[in-house]
Length: 331
Image (cartoon, rainbow, N blue to C red; front, side, top):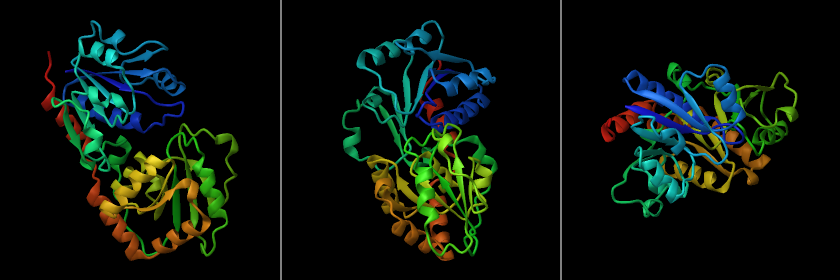
């Protein structure tokens, strides 16, 4: 098949959609499929294209949509990752040329998918009520796809004591939760020499206002291998949370907005795989201190690590590729 991926990234969108889509594209390529990308214009994509991105990329300038690239392109499928909205007219125009597979699109346009894949568990039946009967839906954490960098890493071994805590807040971190957690951590008590690594995403929007690093409070580039040296991670809920879960790293979670906080709380209640502290706006020194104190117990961290690895694994890319191959045939 010849598949075109619609994946936007950068300019506040974050890079999780991009990284996991490249992972899926590579899996499909090894199975003999041809892959192209199409994206909304952004500095991130511009840099990727200029540095030699391994797949052909078409850029959507203002006023354009995928239809302009589907005409005569000989494509068999449009794969859409992330929250991208289409009007009924746009979706009908696209479907004149290809069927649509959507991955974790939470916008109203989700109902236009021929196959819809949702790698989460908190949406109930009302979320799917407007789907056509012909739409095939696949829901569950087993369909989570990840950055390829994770696949070369081993899950962590839980140590008897916490010596280092990581702080992960996603790629762009528009609310600057990274610095906010830093200010809280700076005033915590009884840390007994615990080091903190604050991981700065490639598209982090606040690099100019980052506090200076010190021996116990480092601001360093986001790197999975370094994250696996942490005994505990404080994480803004999102794609990174599931990545940390797959690596077995115990997680203290906060939500950067109400919807993500509710999703995190549902995950915590249903699976007991993370310790969720609620909305970031309500995060306090006392609640963070209490959570860290709880996690300092080895048996507690082992509990969360085991639960997390039981919920999320690293086989989602293969499962999604199987769905694509089994539901769409070349013209």
